[in-house]
Image 1 (cartoon, rainbow, N blue to C red):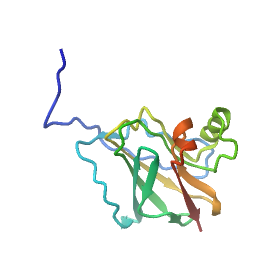
Image 2: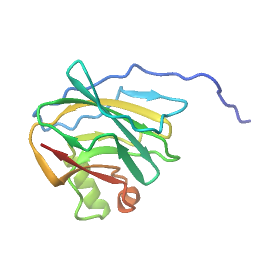
Image 3: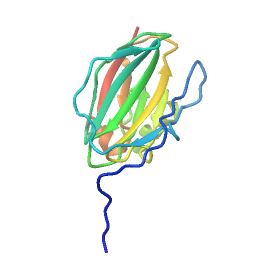
Image 4: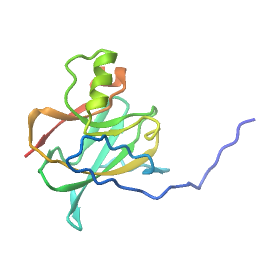
Length: 162
């Protein structure tokens, strides 16, 4: 027997994490919010209470963001929505020169931000706060889905931190 729920969603409160100069990898364990119809249109980054809102959308083998240039010391609130048919990972990490499974694992361990595939199933939205603590010139940081084949198929978006 197959049953389905229609017309209602259950959502947990969206939590944010403040991440400063620590080396810990923030995970958004309590910030997963179920959504019924993710908005696929990118909106310009907006500032609310000194925090800049950034909309990130992941689909199957792509990532889009309404901004890719960031500033040191500015708190950003990333709202990541998975519009794809598969679970995805969201990371802010260095590019992975060794695209093997072990190279991807190294990137996960060194990520500045890591939202796991368990937290970002199809249709999910995760909100996380992060403040960059040092500059990152072009080619040194990216948004990426660090699932082996997703990364190899190009699910990355270069970013710059000024």
